[in-house]
Image 1 (tube, protein in one colour):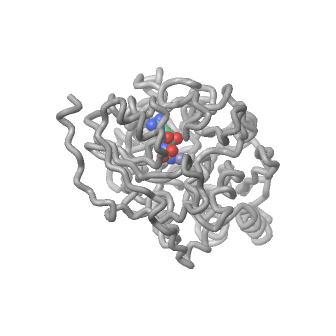
Image 2: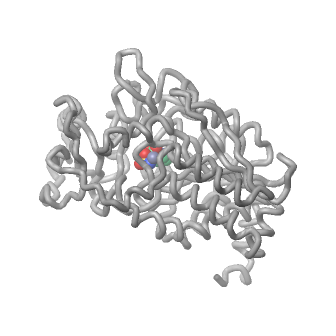
Image 3: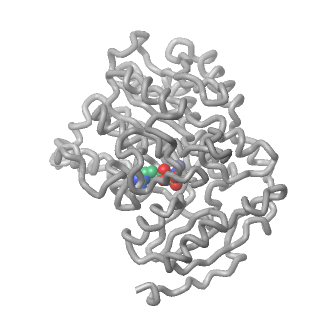
Amino acid sequence: MLIQRTLLAIGCCGFLFTASLFGRMQSDKLFSVKVMTQDRNERNQIVNAGIAIDKVFSDAVGFIGTNRDIEKLKALGFKLKVSDLSQRKFDFPSSDQSFHNYSEVNSALEQIVTKHPNIASRFSIGKSLEGRELQGIRLSGSKKEDTLPTAIFMGCHHAREHLSVEVPLKLAEYLSDKYDSDSRIKDLLDSREVLIVPMINPDGAEYDISSGDYKYWRKNRRKNSDGSYGVDLNRNYAKGFGGEGSSSSTSSDIYHGPSAFSEPETQAVRDWVKSRKKTTVLLSFHTFSELVLWPFGHTNDEVPSHTDQLVFEAMGKKMASWNKYTPQKSSDLYLASGDTTDWAYDELKIFAFTFELSPDSMFSGGFYPGASAIEPTFQANIEPALYLIEKAENPYSVLKEQNDPLKLIP
Ligand code: 0X9
Ligand code: ZN
């Protein structure tokens, strides 16, 4: 079967990765790798080898990895196309300055509160491993906590996914700026709580930009027992912990950590989300690939409630009709165990989604698409976000609307 795989004819220059990785140890050298795959089973074989897939194509997957990853996949019989990232210098477009680092995120949140003290307040859900406050913003016309239906938005579980910080941050600015002038937003915020934590993994995000070059860093900055660094926060939640699509190898980009919720960042999310008892919907922003994903991701099984499955599908497809992303059940992409949304749904019955934001592929900038991607990506996701906030009142109402011919008219 492997012999039938054809090598994709792509020249190295076809890759648009722009990373200067001088100073890395030889063993750390990074490669962009395209692996020819025929189906989901083969994609799952790859994640089970400890690889963090970045992009799924119809006939291949792409990832950033080391020589060890490449050798593992070769031993499994996969055909690969490898491009050495160290040959490429990262070109710093001045426009990348408009991405927010950790302290800029906090200043931006503070500015919103200063501008809109009537509806906005800051909060912290806890501290990162290196002691950074995991800061968030609460937006609501009501001062009373935990009385109104609540929608939660999070960004940046993965360090290098900087666009996933910008979109929830812009959402906070948008909602607060429009409150006085836009009756739809005013009505929504007067009848809901919106909680936004744009940077769940500040240690990783800061590390990724710490040398002036992007480091393609994904995990947090846990020093593991063998001296390697990082736990994949999106493999560290409890549901399906340690299962398919996660790795027990500390050096893997999808290392799940020593136990479920071993990391302060995921503990903070767990305790905070659990404490917000009126939460019905949640959206965790990631990049990239332009996908709308819903549980389960750790198993090919459907969620146990058929009604909930229909709600996930209806909401996911509706949101995808606006941002034009591909809607699908997470496990149809590839299996990944221990992610935020499987836990939030399983434990708390929250309708929890993952968005893989723009760009659509590594050929259009991958994790580092440049700041020109911020505004269009945000614009594409305003309507999905407002829809989610609206449906926080009663997610099950989407089933009725689906059958209501009047609501089918856009
Ligand atoms: O693998 C992940 O954690 C997410 N993709 S990313 O490229 N941002 O790392 C997807 C998580 C949910 N997906 C699946 N269970 N397949
Ligand atoms: Zn991610």
